[in-house]
Length: 192
Image (cartoon, rainbow, N blue to C red; front, side):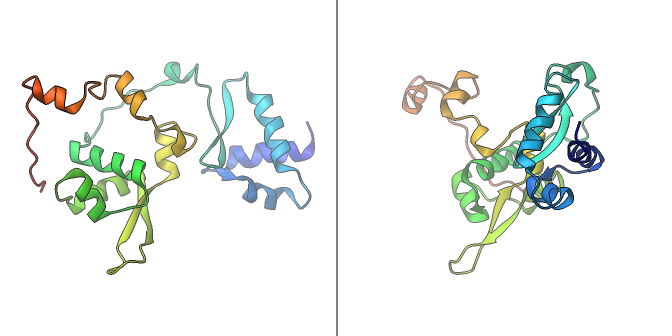
């Protein structure tokens, strides 16, 4: 194993956070082919208990997917996310960058400040840029922590409409057919 490859391995192991290729290049020195080294190191760890993975453009070591279940530790969940919080997270993930007013328009109800606070505390969303429109509203976007928590390499890996229908999370019947069969649409109220 080359000295640069050993240094790369040490940097990734020692870092508390995933590292991007540019940060690694600074530490490895000018003229280093970081992409080639990352590829070589990923191949070296491909069949081991940990793998080198890239999530959101940042590299880190993770438990091999086939071993994850054996290492799982069940912990009591302090607080389950409310439906409003899950809906808000989904809207931000699929429509980002999105303003609070746009979130409320999509959901059809007012969004309490606490909903966004919960998602920020979880490290799943963060404020984005301000829109260049009257009032300069703040936009919301997902974080690398969101990608990491849900095991996504990028936002392109979010399930599409067909995936959601196939998994049973969405009704595959047309909306009018569902209503025509006597299924009631749930009423929406403002959340507090």
